[in-house]
Length: 375
Ligand code: SF4
Image (tube, rainbow, N blue to C red):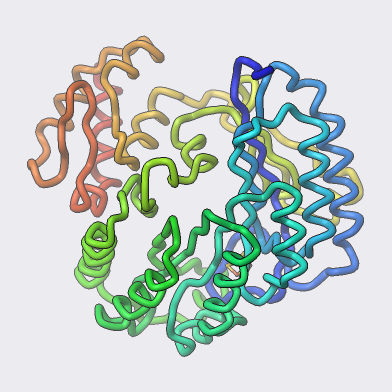
């Protein structure tokens, strides 16, 4: 029997084979000796938490990282079996595992699939080995192609690939070659992320020269138009799906402000009206000393709705804003309607940004937030 409310489960896996030069996600290179203890403790925490969630049906599970595929098939299977045993999981739940080509062994693929995983999110990033090396990625594009095809053969009908743009020295033709090579694999979903240089990373310390702002904008618009030509729906700033049912349901949950639990150091949760984060400290977590801490106790959910909804193709909905938050939508609607028509589209009570609008979404969101506060 389906319970009333839906719930997502995010599990953070903080292990990577090596750190990429640009990465500031919470992950540590190496530490294979800690993986068994890590999975054991995660299973205990899932089991302890489940009795508080009996009113919920879990319809998305996401193993992110880090590099979950590095855990190998047996550990992934143990985690997913624990989720299935302890929670009420919908038969059609989306169960995603992030995977990197260098750790997508056949054993991992078959065990993950048999344990219920039905979607992989693959970090491929580029079809040029020189770019992969410059970013500190430890796989080649040939490895990525091979891993993708083996994932298909293992029964994964829903595969997402990540592509990075605005890399140092990247031209439009280099980017299009990467996109073309990825599309030849026929993925169901593509995520495109512009490289951001975080100061406290090897890449940041090397002070790379990125394409200038105009070139970055040109690269982004190029990706949008080529993916549209290839039949992809641009449903969020960075995300493209071959059909609406192939959107990432788990990430869409974040953008729609729906509840989710988070497990593992660095994981966030939004459950019972409370936003929490687990400290990013594997050693403390394994010792039981990294309890979730409450964050943003005074979070303004209406403001957050403005920020999140304007990142999506569904957009900001004046009726939702009034009904759910009890706020007058008129000032926000006026601010959005004052934008040039190539930035925004109005459809009934909804307003959503165009590809050009997404390019300047930060400024648009600020203007909408200012308008919301002025009333
Ligand atoms: S594989 Fe992903 S999480 Fe791991 S270091 Fe690279 S970018 Fe970071």
